[in-house]
Length: 87
Image (cartoon, rainbow, N blue to C red; front, side, top):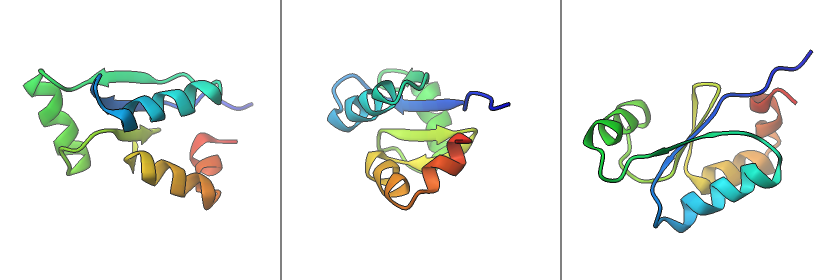
């Protein structure tokens, strides 16, 4: 029995890479939490604490940091994403 992965995207509305990450997960049929950090100092500080970066997007799968959109693509190309997603 497979459980649905916990996916979190920390980003903002004007970031093209954030939009690409959202679209990528949507096309895969995977649900995700979309946390907008722009204009919210507490959310931005929490994202920075968890990721070590202020750049967006920051993507987490099952509480593990993936990184930005390019890191997500690289992980998929290396077949590491399937393991993280439990597929």
